[in-house]
Image 1: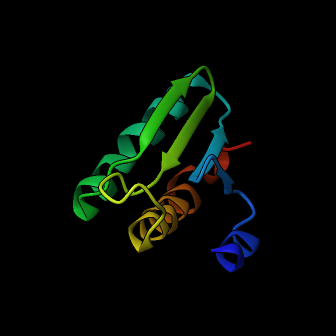
Image 2: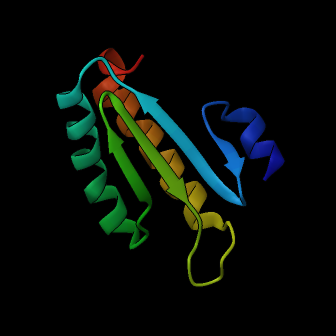
Length: 93
C-alpha cells in the first residue's frame, strides 16, 4: 500500500481509510465531480463515503465488509483519478 501512496501523492491514509480531497474552482464543479463518479462506483459495486462542501469534495475509501483497504479501493481511486484528469482538470485547484 505504501508504494501505491508514494506514487499517488494526492491520496493519503487516514484512520486506515484511503482519502482524497479535491478542491474545485466553484461549487457546480464539485457537484458535477460527485455525479461523475457514480458510474465508476456502480460499475465496481464499490461506493466511497463522499462529503460535498463548498468548492470541495472529500472521498473516503475502505472495503466495508472486511474493514480494510483492498484492491477495490485502489481500483476506485485509479478510476477517480482518470475522471479528474479527463474531465475536471481545468476545475481542480
